[in-house]
Length: 456
Image (cartoon, rainbow, N blue to C red; front, side, top):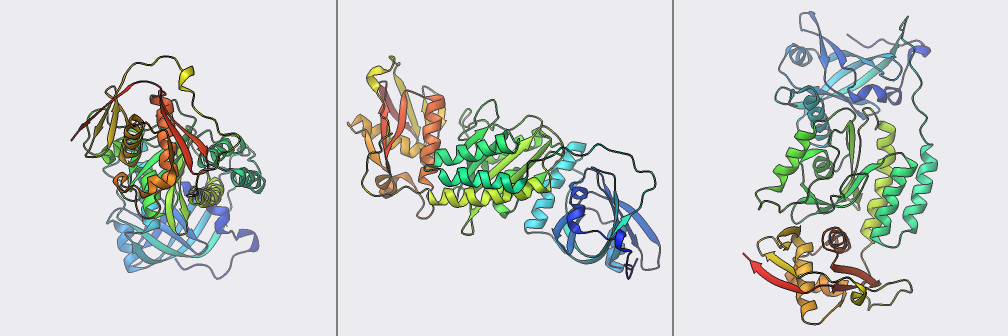
């Protein structure tokens, strides 16, 4: 089982060449030997790229393969590229087993997708990520490999990144920044289903602020840190990609579980695909902090490959930095030339709005329909009360200084919360309007009579 001293030049391969083999579309085959020299061959759920010298193999069962590795740490793994049916042989040395950390969490999330596809959620449970050193990579000649059509031509990634970077750099508001990012995904990369979620450090949750390609926007829908591929990507600060069918039931149940016990109707439906074929969740990291997650999915299996992940990670880095810089100025309001104002006189008559707030979590219901909760709900409640007292114009600075709103001391993401509130009002309650009037300023209007009430 020792690695050969040398291979012919034409047999050598690199880790980069192996990347299409590592998505789990075709199971890998692993050969080990016992201490007495008895060989054993078994299938593997996952071979995971760690770096150019290491891979991680899924440890799921206390079986013969495991016993052999502990007795004799050398092994050989056979991989198949599903795109061109080329075979590769890896010569490995077992180093250690990780049962926590980014590599383990990424493998666990991906294994959950594989297991749900096969209906084996209770059988496929990751015990650890076995870290192996790659001693050599060998191309295995195949005499009669089937001829496959070439993969579709993808856009040149550097050109796409340049155009996307230019779009993001020109955005002046959080709203335009998020729309530019989603436009680039849809039109430049043919990724029409995508969403951006912002992290709330205080509640350990992520909430959707923008989406594209779904029947409903899902703006305001939430998921807890660590739940589903989105929550795992945020918690571990690492991308999570599943490139073949995932059970929507499993993922949506994780979302429901993350919401906890709430009143019926006090949640916003998650907008994801009913039957995703591939998914990737990329954390938005700025100055070492996870500020959110960029999530892309497709109904097509094997649609999101390693190159797509590389590109999305790069795009997410600029997006995260831009979101972090979108904290509005706290200077006195200066009117923008193109800032419009709401015109209540031109609106059609709207019936009475009965608005109820639940103090325990600042949930807001309008005419018995759930609207929003949390900090965004607290902001809306303040605006409604101040508007009843005769105020319509507000500044971001005063909101930040208002301790009753529950904004965190650091990274309050006020702009994201205001954008979330603006979009939820536009979708669910257009008679309440939130509109920017200048830098660090906005106007709130109620185009209908409002009746306010509170409950515990």
